[in-house]
Amino acid sequence: MAVLVGCRSFWQSFRVQSAHRQSACRLAAAFFSRRYVLSNRVVLCPRLNGHGAVTRYYSSDSKDDLRVRYLDGEDSGIVVVGINRPKAKNAISKNLVKMMFEAVEDIKKNKKVRSVILCSLVPGIFCAGADLKERAKMHQSEVGPFVSKARALITELGSLPVPTIAAIDGAALGGGLEMALACDIRISSDTAKMGLVETKLAIIPGAGGTQRLPRVIGVSLAKELIFAARVVDGTQAQQMGLVSHSVEQNDSGDAAYLRALELAREINPQGPIAIRMAKLAINQGIEVDLSTGLAIEEACYSQVIPTKDRLEGLAAFKEKRQPQYKGE
Image (cartoon, rainbow, N blue to C red; front, side, top):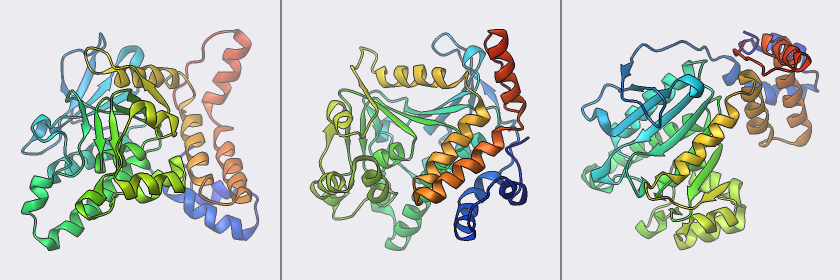
């Protein structure tokens, strides 16, 4: 597949100065070195919202803490990752981190995935942050490694090659908001509560919050929210750019999820390789100077030129029909 190329062919179409070339190669190398294989850990589950789904349970004592549904039919390609720890308000535990690592790795290897929705299966809660009851039982020497692992998980979530959408239908606090910040797009209900509240506990956000929040809403406002441990609702979050959409909550408490599903359905018909390349170009380009960013864009564009999908798009346009992209 055209996406899976080495750095040598990558640079044949990437004609930039050597200083830019070295830095941009490092940025893109991790993406282009990935390989995609299907997992066979599959268990059928009941239909969801009128569409069939596949749930994958991951090896753990508390296997229901995370449920991953691979939708089918017209929604094939959409993956719904649902956090399900009702007694702990979806708090981030060692077990949840382990299960999410496995889920993210599985998604990363599956080239048929086109978008991911991260949501909660617990009404009124997205994720309350770290599991403080579990944390209180940890020895001081265990805290640092656990936070490092949680940070690595959220980094992996942010590095998924496909679009990720956080559907925030309830409280997203501390590590819960950090998880949402790692997603490409955030959608909340108007009643959802969000905040990085760690300073209340005399600590700081440790899973990317101090870095991602300023990149999303600006440095000054991010400092204000973190310093004051302020919690905002969905409407306020949209006004400051923390979420892209704030929707009125419904009686079933899943308004943000339903809006996220609508967006995933908008993304689904588009060229999957093009979507991955667009995400890579944006994510990597925004971290470097404009000249290097434009070179990254040129390199990513070169990857879509030889694809079958590009030819299918041209043929469909000529024949006035909907394209049928296969990710090839």
